[in-house]
Image 1 (cartoon, rainbow, N blue to C red):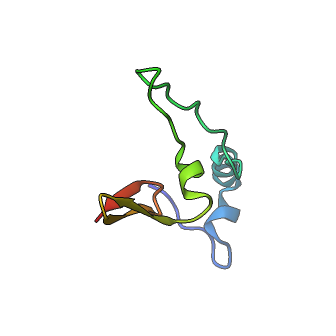
Image 2 (cartoon, helix red, strand yellow):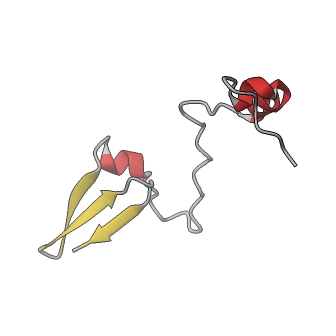
Length: 84
């Protein structure tokens, strides 16, 4: 059974080894991780566009197809949604 820290002392100060191990286990993630290489098309005749090239720094674009307007939107989770 774990004992409560003495009065006036927080849990981290009462057990410095657990604080040190918790701090060591935290890892920092670089601000921008390198992107994975773009997948290669199965056919050499296909044109491949990256979403960054299409969106050009915006969160949403409009695409006209057969006189209809579609929205291509980048979500907060980094996913793409195409809607009419």
